[in-house]
Image (cartoon, rainbow, N blue to C red; front, side, top):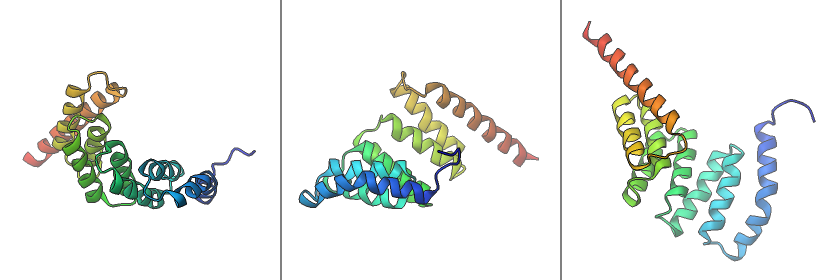
Amino acid sequence: MSGTMPSLDDLKHTADMKAAPLLEKLKSDPKNAQLQNQIGLVYENAHQFKVAAGYFEKSLESDPKNVGVRADYASCLYYTGDVDGALAQLNQSLVYNPTHGGTLMNLGIIKWQAKKDADGAVAAWEKLLKYNPDFPQKDLVQHMITQAKQRAKSAGDGQKG
């Protein structure tokens, strides 16, 4: 095996092979939210975000309150360029579970990176740490809060001149 990274076509081919037995099961149980989610994860891990989003969306039709699936769906929407769709999904997740760590993490990242909303990002991340004090990526979240606050401050200083 060479040291080159697999291409997206290689990743898709691998995902298709991994998904095949799950897709076969899905034929006899097409509304199985867990199967839809598993297939979505296979394609998401292979960077096939449009395909994955379709399976996550179908999973949510049967299990709309599954915030984990909704967070994955939002990530796929974000990676395919649908920032507003991603934010809508994350906000819907917060309706079902207002303290979900992954949702608040992603909400902050998208607000900061895609919407240039440092204050909104910081608010999401501070809420994340308030409700999830043992969050596994706590140090990263604290670092992002510091960065976002610094950027917001320097942007504000630059506008006063």
